[in-house]
Length: 343
Image (cartoon, rainbow, N blue to C red):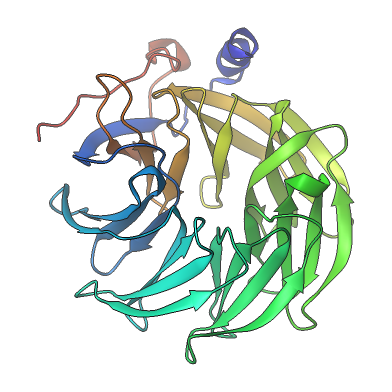
């Protein structure tokens, strides 16, 4: 538990102009039980898709109206999820049976089912190659041809992959492989691992974010809870800072030079990138226990809150506030909350 250290860091680094997260509203998800995993976003249709793993469903939320509008059922531990706007298709990776199920984006009717080894997890799309990558099994990264709706390649890894990121200006994939205690670097053209980067004494490296312009890869670990930053040219670790526990999602905001880490300990940690090698925790936004899954669309951060006791299952929407007053006029960042919106 690093809360006293984190609080000291926050106040020491408070600036006159910061961009904290402001809780705008909550979208309830009635009837959703258990763990919530990843998100997908339909920017044109203003929809958010939520993989409710413990509920064996995908919840479809209307962001304009702030309410749920559909539920896809009959899934088996849905984890990774991706909405492909160009074909109006929703892809759902199921950890329970190793399938990637494809649905029509309008009717939500099933289109086809693709089979991987097992434990189908994170999904990422390579738009230039029209390939959807899926982490699965005891160690593999599968490539799905979205035109053919077929798995066309499998890249072997040392253990099950967690979060991975694709370069946009290059052909590399950076893959967190916590079971092997490293980051694997994959060549998308050759479909092979070309490098292995050690995470040192840290472990449980699950979430990952990429600052491609500055050649920096950010990895959050849970054991101990810390943020590691790697130079993607050399593969060397260049920075390490503390963060709250049980981090599951990590996002880099290139415009504001900020990192957002959603942590199951009950906080969203906001880091400022001073320069590519230096990161300062500027705010820790208090959320809820086990609320660790998030999505960032460039303007808002969406946080999944599971049902626990009196706490309902919901998605909290946070706006990034561009300008605030002096640091001594701010509300305590570890106690910041917003009003719950009426259902």
